[in-house]
Amino acid sequence: MPTLTEIQRDVVPTATWLSPASAASPEVGWVRVFRARVPALDGLEPGDLALVPETVLDALAAGPADPAAVVDELASAGACGVLLLGEGEVGAAAASLLDAALPRSCPVLRLVGREAADVERSIVGYLVNRRAELDRQAARVESVAERVALDGRGLDAIAGAIGGSIGRAVAIEDERGVALVLHAPATVPGAAAAAARYMSQPRHVALRVPLPGAGALAFLGPQPASDLDRAVAERVAPLLALELARGPAASAGRMGPVPGEGLPQDGPPWVVIVGRQVDRLSGAGATPSREERERIRELVAGLLPARRLALRGDATSQEYRVVAAIAPDDPRGLDVADRIAATIGRTVAVSRPFRAAEDRSAAEAEARATLEAVEELESAERAGRSEASPMPTPAAPFACSSERRVVVAERLPAYRLLGELHNLPNGVRLARQLLAPMLAGSPSAQRRDLRTLRAVLERPAAAAAADALGVHRNTLLYRVSRIEDRTGWRLDDPELRLALSVAVRLVQKDE
Image 1 (cartoon, helix red, strand yellow):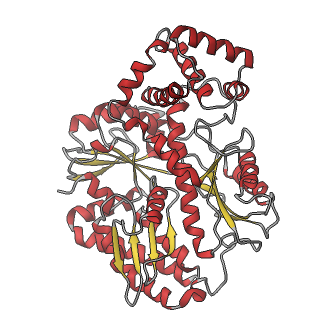
Image 2 (cartoon, rainbow, N blue to C red; image 1 turned 60 degrees about the vertical axis):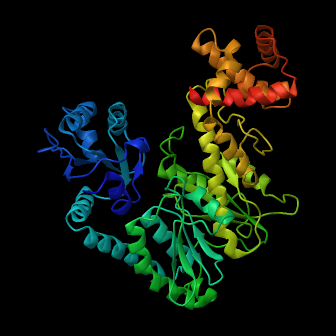
Image 3 (cartoon, rainbow, N blue to C red; image 1 turned 120 degrees about the horizontal axis):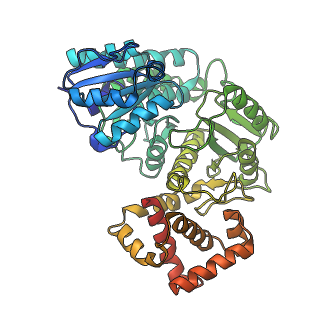
C-alpha cells in the first residue's frame, strides 16, 4: 500500500503538511469523506485517510460534533491521517482539530481549492490503479498548460501552470542550460528557497528532462522527484519544445503581454519587490478582505507612474509583486520599497537590480526567498512579543529608511544563517548556561529582560533600542543597568556582545 507521503506527492502535490514531517509515513488503505451528519465518518477502518471539508467541519462544530472528538474517533479506529479541504485561511474548527491531532501524532495535511468528490476519486484511483491515475493527473496538468499556451501567454505563464499544478518550483532551460524561465509558486512553502538555490547551483535539481530538439525542463527543490513529476514532464515536454521552437518573440505572446505582467517602460535597471497580500498560516494579523486588498493595490499602483511601476497578479494573489524601474538617486530601489511597505503595512523584500528582461523571474524568486527567510526569523518571536509598535523594528540586519521594514536580497545568506542557529550542536544548552543569570524570576520578567537585551545588542544606539521596545530611553538605560548589575556583564564588550546575541536568539527560539 502507498504511504501518505506518496499520496501527497503523486495525487495532491499542492497539499501542505500541518503536522510534523516525522508523522508522514503511515500506509493508506482507503479514503473516507467527512459527511454533514452524525456520525460524520462511517465504517472507519485501520489505515483509512479522512477527507474533511472545512465547511462541513465548521457546520458540525457549531452543533453536535467537537473537532477533538473527531480526532479521538480517528485515533481509536487507527486512521492514518486527515486531509483538510479548505479555502483561504484555516478556520477555528480546523485549527481546533489540528490542536487535538498534534499530541496524538495524527498526520494532518491541508489542500486548498479542490472539491471532496474530486479528491476522493483521485485517491481511490491511485489506490486501485496507480499508473492510470498518474496518467490522468499528468493529462490534467498538460491540459492546463495547453490552455495557457493557446492564450499566447508565453513560457513564463506555462511554467507557472506546471509549477502551480505539481506544487514545486520549475525552470525551463535553453540548449546551453541557461534558465529562460524560473517559476516558484507563491503558495508552496520552500519553493522560493529552491529557486534561489538553483540560481546559485543550477546543476543541483530534483529532475531534469531534456526537451525534444533542445532545452530542458527542470524540477527544483531538495525533495526527490515523484512519479507524478516524471509523468508530467513526459506529457508537457512536446508542448514546451514547440513553444521554444517558436522563438523568444513568439513566446512573448501573440496577443501581447498580459496586463500587469510586463516590465515598466523606464529602465533597465529594474527591481522586484514582494510583500504578503494574504497571510500564511504562520503569519500574524488578520487577512484583509478582497475589497480592502483591491483598494490597497490601487494605492500601490499609484505610488509611481505606470512607466516606472508594474503591479503583477490581482486581488486573489498571495502576494504583492511589483516590478519597479529604479531611479538614479535610488540605485537599489529601497526608497520605492519603503513606500510600498508603508502602503501595505507589511514587510517587503527587494531583489538585486537586473537589466535583462529574462532575469525578471529569477529576481522575483530571489525576493520571495528573502521574504520567506525573514518570516522564519520572525515566527519564533511573535508569541512572546508584547512591547512592540504596530510595525516594530526588525530583529535582523534589515536595510530600511524608517521603522517600516524593507529586507534586501543581498542579505539572504545572513537571514538563513541566523535562521539556522538553532541547529548548532548543544547550542540551546550552552546558550542557557550563558544566560543563566537572566533566566530567573517570573516568565514575564525573563521575556522582558531577554527582549531588552536583544534590542540593545542589535541596535547601535540606546534611542533606537528604546523605540523598538516602545519605552522611554531612561527606562531602557535603567533596565540595562539592572541587567549589568545582576550578571556582572559589560554590554560594551564586543566579544561578549557577539556571544550574547547568538545566545538570546537560541533561547527565544527554543521557548
